[in-house]
Amino acid sequence: MKFEMMAARDSLQDQLASNDATSGMYVRVHGKNLILGREETYQEVTERVDMVRLTQRTSHGYGLSYKRHTGRWERMPFEGTIEELVTLLQEGLTHMVAPL
Image (cartoon, rainbow, N blue to C red; front, side, top):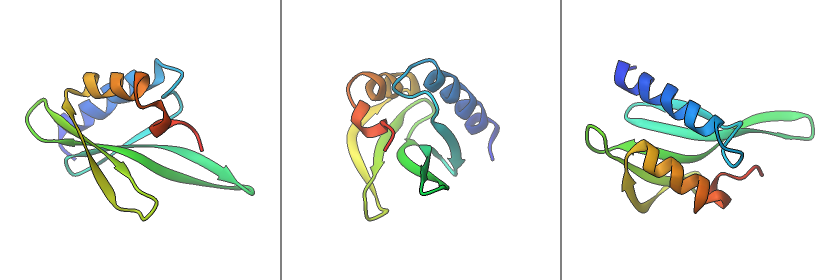
């Protein structure tokens, strides 16, 4: 895992924890992707549910995707810095990151 993606993950985790809409979410790195999700429990079974993905497109620019019910990632028409995309998730797309 590249150092820059580890640093981005740690920064993103702090930003998510600072807001009620996104607190409790996990962040994992997969290549150039930062995958955000929640741990959900159903009938005493806990599993990780990936919800949205930030894909690095430039040195500081990311694209936003969401995970469909089919398991495929669907690109959304949003790009920006991590901070801009987190603000979008926390203020405009809270339904995408709400607990199930």
